[in-house]
Length: 446
Ligand code: GUN
Ligand code: ZN
Image (cartoon, rainbow, N blue to C red; front, side, top):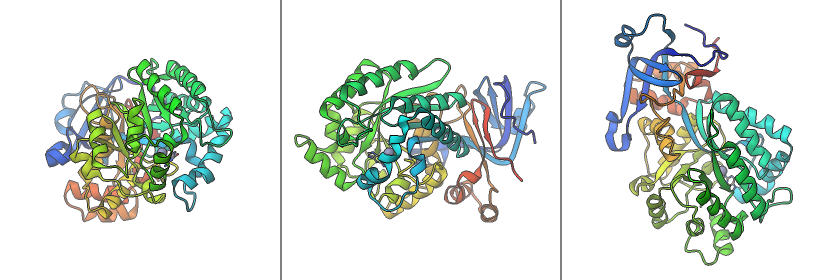
């Protein structure tokens, strides 16, 4: 096997041989025909983009002589995972015991986020969290920084250095927040504007900006109004926030915005519900809210490890789908308990099961790749191996642990094998992560 070299410059044409799986549609609608699978496949990359995929034996005969072939036979290549919601600045408080979200914010999150006033701390955690995403096969993500402008600069710089596709933003919070973590409506507006100018669609990068009001309770109406103004002034910029995660939070929103028809109505009133708006959690909603989200083109981030860990509740994926809302999965680190999208899928399976709903492995892998890319409006460039898309992919080791190897020995169909990967897999299963055909993480095997 050619050992991937982390320092190779972007190359012309390169081929990767392995089992290959991707989705051209949604398995909920199309069943198995939504997936394209090659047991002995070849992924051909040119200039960092997918040139084509197909059967290895047929394609090998047509390759230009001297084409470098990286041999990953025995492994499974899938498109890079899409994490639609996480907080890089909460890396150090992941797995903090025993609270629901509002107390958890006060007790663990806000003290941790205060430290991001220090640019050196922000840079160190940003680099760690980007490495952690790559170790877990995540190649595209939507990320909260903290209230400090420098924390957004830090995560953008770290993502830029590794070529990641990332949407991120500085948090807006001008009330109900502790000292040291408060901006003002005006300063939040100005800082966001500067960050948009510096980072959004910066040439040579795959970075975008998201206007980021933390959630309704920590913003004044003036701040939410200015968030809407930023979106109006900068077409193409994203919006990210939290919505209806916890029952106590929902009650608080009703008290703070007594005129509102619902929690979602608060965001809608200020023009924050539109295509490229992504809301995390979306648990305690009425059908009318979900319908409104679908009509406005907003997306939901389903964060099962966080929803279970913080005791928030059970996401209704069936209704979201029935009503046509775009959904992706989010790790929600550090309310969530893992950077691993595979672990996130396995908790999604369990959380849905508790809610009387089902998610098979094809549906899970679709949600983590093309589904997530659609939720983030990135599906023109990532999410599957259509020719011309960026060659962002993960190499999964289907014999990562003795248990996985043993269990797979008796697994028959592709669906069954993928289900084992989804239930038993985690970062140990990620053998390598490639961005634009370049290896950004490789686990050296014993
Ligand atoms: N609601 C407001 N802020 C947060 C946060 O940082 N994490 C989670 N899970 N919920 C929130
Ligand atoms: Zn969150």
